[in-house]
Length: 499
Ligand SMILES: NC(=O)c1ccc[n+]([C@@H]2O[C@H](COP(=O)([O-])OP(=O)(O)OC[C@H]3O[C@@H](n4cnc5c(N)ncnc54)[C@H](O)[C@@H]3O)[C@@H](O)[C@H]2O)c1
Ligand SMILES: O=c1ccn([C@@H]2O[C@H](COP(=O)(O)OP(=O)(O)O[C@H]3O[C@H](CO)[C@@H](O)[C@H](O)[C@H]3O)[C@@H](O)[C@H]2O)c(=O)[nH]1
Image (cartoon, rainbow, N blue to C red; front, side, top):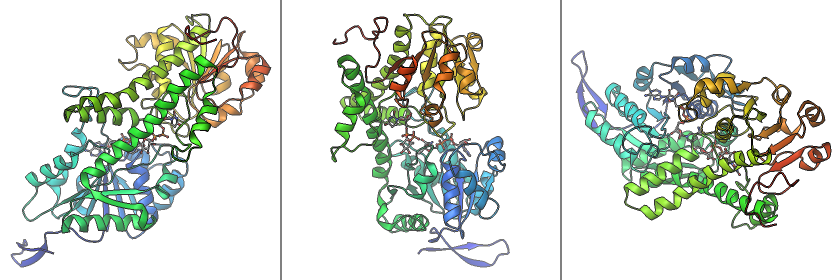
């Protein structure tokens, strides 16, 4: 461990270490979002001797974390926050003070797709990461372990290192680690408590290894040693993007197969089962549907394609881009199927949209496929009655009134009604479309629903969760993804279907 001589205010000569502390005692997390909040709650829960301060620039978000109604919905999160908050888990907007006091800092800020300038619509916008790094450099009086938890393009840690090096106070040497997060929304607590693996990438130097060991110790409180994988920084950053690209690729692959099923009479559920029982392939992430959404897959695959282009690898970029293209096709296909089945027009027809979040057990709507299904139906003049158990009304309207979704927000207000229950949503509708796989949609009283709908009543199951046989017996016209159910002559969605 290196030492440096520094003069303290009282002119006494004092020895101070330049290196990072080996033991983590205080953590500051920058960014109190879907990752920062749950991750730090679990750290605080499992490491009672570590003080964890979660910070954010948003006063509203911090107030919510300090209240009984947390800003995000995650099963089991409330109980863990209640147990740790005020003990060794705190939420604050004083980012600078928290950085000063901590010896390990998690950067967990958003890295959205750029909406302007170079790389618009593809590259990750790293402005929040950069700002966090500059703040750390400016306010730190001691060397810290700086952990990149946000998902970033490969070599982002190099930019953080450069910013820190160029701005730190004399005698200070921070260590930057990559520790990408793999939690899924809706199962965040389960994933954090029992991760498949924890990745830590760092510098291959003695200081880098010390920092890796310190972070490994934190996870070691509850994660088995063999699940903590250490590697070089760039491998760690690329592993995160690759994992998401592989997962998204499986969904686009099964969705591509679903189109073939509809055209041939094969059944995508049977095909997915047959394919997934091959142990080399595995059964997870083969659920066909209306396409993937969420804040990560679209953003991270686009980020990967942009990275490939920047590295002058156009063929590789085109390969990954195809995953996004297939996803767009799938969302569009579902909306087209609704229009075509309903006698080629949905103008002024009421359609119930059940589910608006991007998947069940979350209130998150970022990149939700439901948004695009609604967008296409609104463009056709449909009146939508939308219900979601966890997404609040304003959030739904905000998503649908974004300029990239609707050119005419007033028209959206006229055509959309947000409902408090599924039964309210289906009142007087011609059709019902399931856009999120919430369990409660399986349990609805479909006989009552049948009576409340106009005839013939259509059900479009975009998530393959309903009992189609039972619905047909009640009298519904049922359509789904990747298999043919009822086929009256009015409903032949795909002109080139093999009969
Ligand atoms: N959401 C997920 O399930 C998930 C899973 C794994 C990884 N990730 C990645 O983790 C990162 C964070 O994702 P998220 O979903 O938690 O985002 P989020 O938008 O929910 O939260 C980010 C928070 O950071 C805050 N912030 C931004 N700049 C700040 C600054 N300078 N100082 C203090 N606070 C600041 C924002 O106000 C926001 O509250 C992203 O890179 C994402 O790709 C997300
Ligand atoms: O077989 C499947 C599985 C998922 N989906 C859809 O894919 C999207 C993403 O689902 P999921 O991966 O479960 O949720 P996320 O919270 O987005 O989690 C992903 O993105 C996170 C952010 O990077 C990663 O940490 C996780 O490991 C990764 O699974 C959702 O719209 C799902 O409905 C399908 O259509 N079919």
